[in-house]
View 1: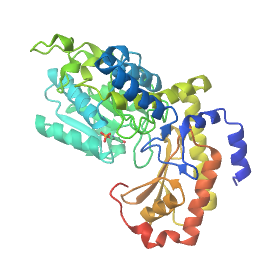
View 2 (view 1 turned 30 degrees about the vertical axis):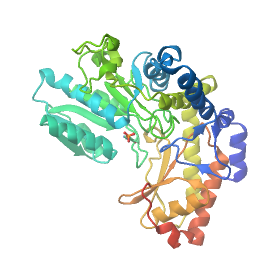
View 3 (view 1 turned 135 degrees about the vertical axis):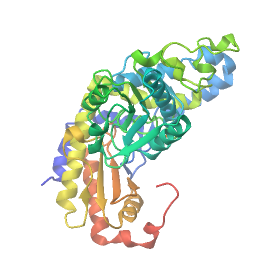
Length: 420
Ligand SMILES: *Cc1c(COP(=O)(O)O)cnc(C)c1O
């Protein structure tokens, strides 16, 4: 049995504990939704205020040069690169995940089909995040291609002579199940296809090594584990072997080789800069940089390897506590127990009441979220930057009380909100 004292002892010897002080977390809240919207780093409000008051207010248009605005997508991209096994100069922070997916999937399709037009199928996973599937569906429709949706176990066998691109999310948003990036990439390459990886639930959450995996393209989110703020810019990575081979179709002036030459014809910038589109949201990039800097603060303490170790210890602890203390209440586990297959979240299932249980927990200050499906899911994200083992204990204690008291049956917890 895991005790509260065990949890406190684990916190006391956690070398990452000081990182918690980098964040503003409201009193009385246990925040288990950093996989949906990361919390606010303490540095962000003052830094954004400075960007508004000094850089914009005083510097005006001069700040594009003097305050580093123009370089921001690549400067921030270099910080993301350190978290995902990419190299400096290979990543840009820009646009949203959905838009970046459109750009890289377009590029992947054009590269494969330039000399193999018979490859006309995009393969993805049926349980992939909907925007990924919707973007792929729209693009396939426009190009007369086919989007084929499969269960995870069917994918390896389905890759073949007609496959152009395999598009997968590395860690599944609903279940927290993680693909073996290197093995899947190898199999896709053997079949002659390219792979697009969505790292929305991986960047800042698990160790990723894009180069070691031989990956082709990757995109990911800035407002989840990277703590960039609501609607923060996302990122895009393209392996250098592909970066100069194709113009992505949103070929706006920021992707031009010489944007300020104002020529009527388009010349793509070399490398990843051609994956930009138009003028960048500088205030949002400013906030994102504060989020990325919380990870750089973790580098001297062991970086992503240390964060991953703690993330697995936290999710192991939470699973054990739920099984020990909430047994008999109809909860199941959707997240893999095997470490190699687990992201940084724990998803519990329940046939009825999952939505209301999550609402009752939120009313008690334990913020997770609900994802509809069969079965419905109670989703808890674990972020080792600011969560501890006593937080796991307290969250499970609230869950136990919500289940034992039946308070989730109250009408107020069963009303649906627009955003779940
Ligand atoms: C969060 C998430 C997105 C979000 O896309 P937006 O363009 O930011 O709305 C996309 N894909 C996956 C897998 C996600 O988890």
